[in-house]
Image (cartoon, rainbow, N blue to C red; front, side):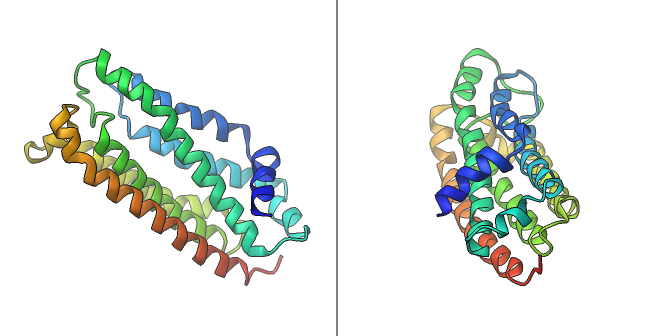
Length: 213
């Protein structure tokens, strides 16, 4: 049932920008560009889709189907996971090419192993704020986005600035030894993202159960 709801989300509820922004992972190949913007786009796309769903009464329509309210929340959470992870996967080959073709990025962090670990943490931060706040009403997508995007932008800024300090230059490296040193950050990012999505689903489903549509 949840798979069918996810299919419905992708075919009916998703705004076209959701797919376009997922492709913006290729921006990591652009020289002298703040690659943290990729994660901002990964957060902006779900907001546009949720706002689009509000205008088309998607939540109300889905609630009329013979499905549990918790499954509706689960499908929405899976939509974010699929979109964000797809964006990261699309960016990987372009990150490899970028590190092969161009010199160091003077703007901020390189698209390396640490970059993806931080990115998962950034997505986790956004999702853990956006989803529970949205499902308190299942309508106020703008307020939920505002609550989530401010700390997310701060986190992206910290990531970009951090690598300019001498003590953290290893986070900006694409050398083999440094990439191995960055692996724990990627692992932590994967764990944080997974746990945060489970918590976000639980809190969102609990709130949505109390919403009178």
